[in-house]
Length: 111
Length: 117
Image 1 (cartoon, rainbow over the protein chains, first blue to last red):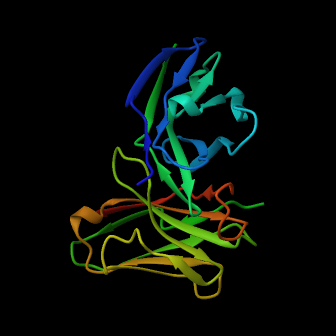
Image 2: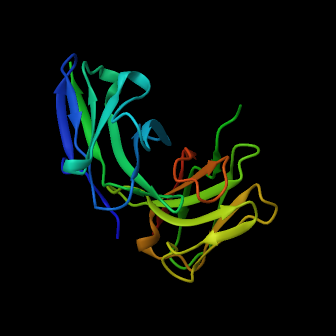
């Protein structure tokens, strides 16, 4: 089955520092990949998505992600983290319209 | 416009009780999805509707789970004879495009947190 792996359960960064959250997907045809953010008590909000074309994707809130087929990765990055970025981040892929999510990475931001 | 809404936001049930969870998708959205999110886990797919047709129910964990969308708008997820392992957040999402659109953004509601005692 096609799956998504997020190796880091919990990451802590200082405000203003750069951030990279890892995501790996299992082998398959052209993957449709997404990054969602979930704040406590809130629904999932789409940050960005990749289907084809330029492998560097820009999203909302200053986030970007790079698709690397050779590494089966779709890592999320942000050059300077803000305290409000503290949340749970989920990588997902779409197959037959339904989303398969990773287990998530909880981001903590220290001031 | 309004986003996806879900009710109730919190539900506590005694083991063995039946529960019904409601989802109001974004107006005009054709596709509707239900996901189950256990504590500390990512959401897992339960079922998918295109208008009133239930096209995929492969994720429903048992025959105690039933979902419907009779008029192609509001959807209800029903769980019969609840068990403790049913405790989770149930998320609803809608998308404006039809089946086959792997690229379609799904808009999520805030979820219903179900606790079974």
